[in-house]
Image (cartoon, rainbow, N blue to C red; front, side, top):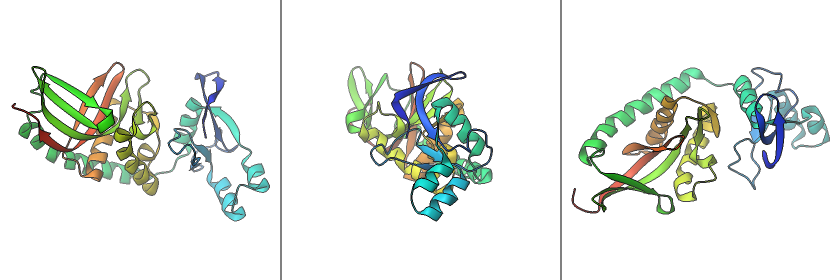
Length: 246
């Protein structure tokens, strides 16, 4: 697992949390990228990683014993290097990813127009979201009008040009984080890096793509994006109820 208390100084990325990978991954390419989550830290953004060769030895041994550990010879790298190593070595079906995103966009677009029109999204003076009960509330003249039950998808940072899934953001409360874990499970089952991994280099459109995937997977009726100091927070809407007059 990554160790946020243990930092490493990298000549390229500066100071960042220490992470751990097998000896074959740093200089490798297309070696496969297998991860193991610590049960005590199931939402670790940078879980221990090893290549397919190490995974084969691990399977033969049945556990991380002396032989498996010697073959892997785990190395410490910074979080930035970890992400670059992962991008070089992760194997995935690119056509499957494109198809999933395309189908998900079709799903969301078909529902988003109805969501926006039916509930007048965009016509309200103010919005506020509340993590403790996972709601997004639209108001006029200080009076709440519409309440949406939401799940946070994740956030795009314009400062670092990265995407982070809500499940990996420990500054968020559990009620808004939990739904996004279903997409991590989907990504792991399909072997798709953008869905399975906590954070990665991204562009603004990636936020909408991941939102569409989560909307379709969870059967959401719409989506919303709120600005932050350094980017945007994306969320999907599960259901809506009126609180007052429009």
